[in-house]
Image 1 (cartoon, rainbow, N blue to C red):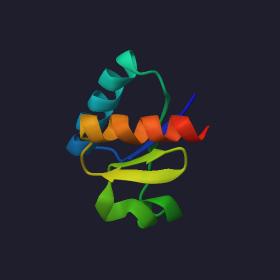
Image 2 (image 1 turned 135 degrees about the vertical axis):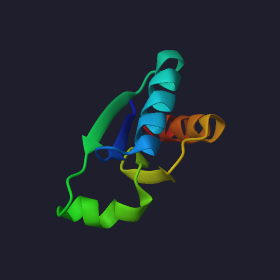
Image 3 (image 1 turned 90 degrees about the horizontal axis):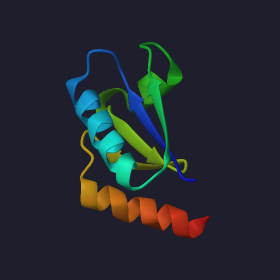
Image 4 (image 1 turned 90 degrees about the vertical axis):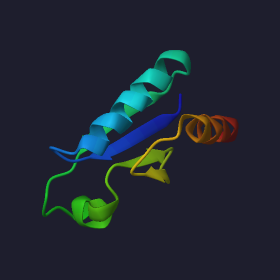
Amino acid sequence: MTLVELYSKPGCHLCEVARDVLTHIQQKHPFRLAVIELVEGTAEYELYNERIPVVVIDHEVAFHYRVPEKAFLARLAEAERKQ
């Protein structure tokens, strides 16, 4: 099953929206979802800071800020084909 990671931070409205979109899609198209809350001062936070939320599909950055459903489904299908 494909792994989708959502890099998020506390108090981030766009992160909440991205999580809602992903959980909605997940109901129809199953995938593993890991939500990673980044903490200021960590290497990952510094890496993604201005681009949070970040969606990573099978270890490849796929989206920043927003998760367009059709584009996400296309990337998910591509990742599943590679497995």
